[in-house]
Image 1 (cartoon, one colour):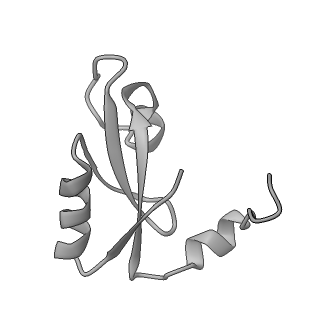
Image 2 (image 1 turned 30 degrees about the vertical axis):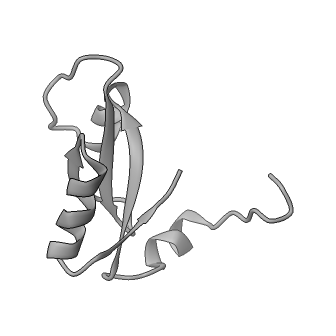
Image 3 (image 1 turned 180 degrees about the vertical axis):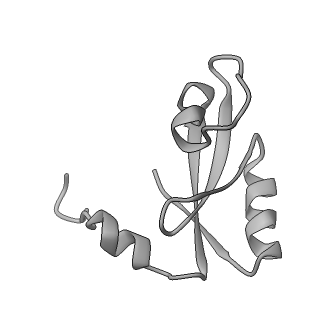
Length: 83
């Protein structure tokens, strides 16, 4: 970690933004079941986008970053990227 990077505790991160922020993060198809347990089996190596609540609850999974952002906006959420 560099001096300009900071780490937030998971519970503080969950409260950050309340019901107004959704987190957008890239995921590989191999990681999907950890976030979306009911998701169907996917081919390995697919690059996808997960939209999550501030508390980490899954909202949607898509292969399009633009679609995830649009879904957040439709639900009056500000989408921010996390990596």
